[in-house]
Image (cartoon, rainbow, N blue to C red; front, side):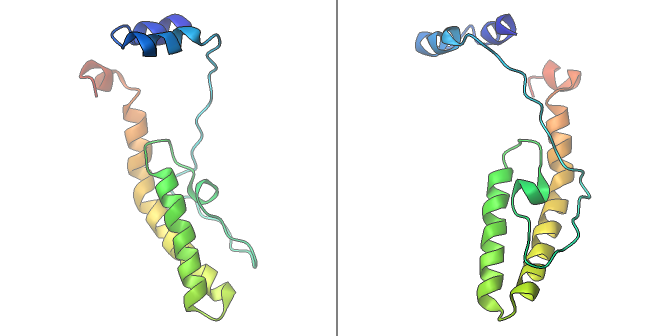
Length: 122
């Protein structure tokens, strides 16, 4: 693993190469994702936000969705006197947005690791 990582960055600036050279351990970490059609059963007093609601491959949308989720829940709670109804309304928005983005996130992440993507540099 060390040879693969350090060999991939031979053209980097010397100070960045020293950073890589100082790494003694490279640890493989699994990447998890929920299925594109994931939904949860609503429970009174509990809701899911961010990765708990829509864990996606790391393609750059996760934390942005988490912030939007939190904003949607806060806005719904401020707009409605009934907290349970407000959260259900926000959950519908959260689920709809995630289900619209999830297929592209999964597909895009899978393409990063295909032979075709590596052949053209993409």
